[in-house]
Amino acid sequence: NVSSALTAIEDLLTSILDLSKLEAGVFVPAVQAVSLGALFDQLMSGVQPIARKKGLWLTCRPTAATVNSDPLMLRRILQNLLANATNYTQKGGLLLAARRRGNSVRIEVWDTGPGISPAERDRIFEEFQRGAASERAGGTGFGLGLSIVKRMSEALNHPLELCSRVGHGTRFAL
Image (cartoon, rainbow, N blue to C red; front, side, top):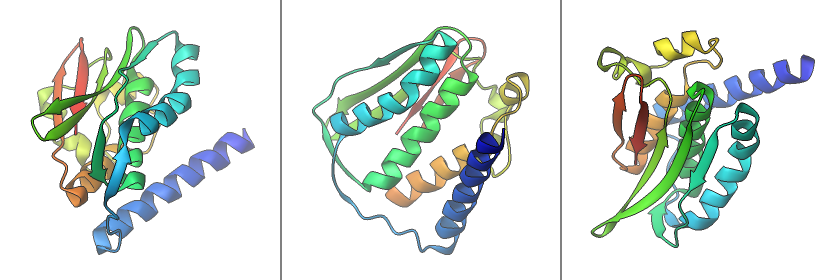
């Protein structure tokens, strides 16, 4: 219990520090070439044990794509999206994929979770806000993950999209 409490406190402090850095404008992206294949492998190894424990399928489409981004910020964005997808999905699974769109690459995180109602879609990106699915799932987390995702994606000038259908799942695209 002490170990999990300390981990939760560390996560909260890291999230608050990230938000304050973004707010102050001192979290400046260090844009460079990022291999999505290597990044996806790292992300999958982190989320796989949790998905397996919940009985969820987890699919990652292999990619050789390279994008220009800040590797730490991009990893944090995708970690937050995958963590949310894993936490709120009770049956079915998750997909992480990269799709070429002309000269761009679109990174997508899909889940078969409860979905996000239209009324909650703006609010969930605010600090300390969680949707109804969070309450039904036991209310884990601090309501900072999607706020960090939104701010980091804006700092990187990577448009963030949300498409969701209540009762069927959600897709975040970057």
